[in-house]
Image 1 (cartoon, rainbow, N blue to C red):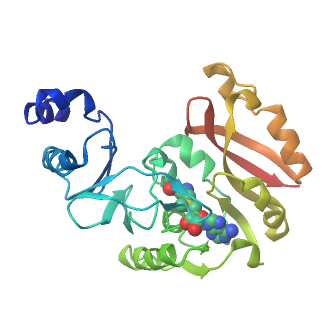
Image 2 (cartoon, rainbow, N blue to C red):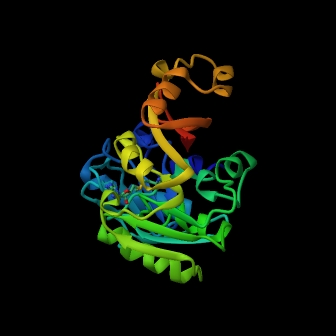
Length: 281
Ligand SMILES: C[S@@+](CC[C@H](N)C(=O)[O-])C[C@H]1O[C@@H](n2cnc3c(N)ncnc32)[C@H](O)[C@@H]1O
């Protein structure tokens, strides 16, 4: 039986239409929306979800906002611990979900050289000596790149001291030795690299000028961003095999040639999270 069917067997039928049918399980923590339920019912229902889905903690789904992508205030519905651990493609990530975001939709795309062919294609670099991750967070991408390129130095930068705390732990816990950590705004760091990774969504383009000035000749920027499908000119699935002209033109102004372009995931009904390989020219 599916978990929701089991949950329904344990909940009064007058509440069935208020039960969430979707949730995110991140390590030992479940993120769920119980806002439809009366306050005095939330804890009991959260406990049933925890039991059926085998997690220790349940928290109310909230928006992740601001430059540092911090979750808005955290409502613990059941349990006490918001620190959890996730294993993905051979890397263990520890983080506190009350302080830091985790995007389940990026699973696979964080795997660098350890995952699907499509991802390997975007994360294959020719003997890089230095790779800089400008928005390293807790090491989402940096740890996999460090493992994939043991001879390269990975410089992982993040502005948020909390993320840096977990990044430091995660580097140690995974016995990774080729990561240097910097707690600063990436625009204050003027170090040069063969590859610069921009794993950010919102205004990634604002970081391209700095990226361009820090890339070695012929260097590569791995660019993540979200665009409206309309703007990209993509109507059907088959359009996704090409590089949108509008995007290429925009990148040309910034001094880059677009070599590869792909959708990572849907980001709302009419928007897509994309990844692109940009070559400095
Ligand atoms: C949370 S990550 C993005 C999510 C990630 N790509 C994933 O797979 O889940 C974004 C990170 O960028 C950091 N950040 C935002 N602006 C920054 C800046 N100007 N310089 C350095 N780090 C920054 C935030 O602190 C945050 O940790």
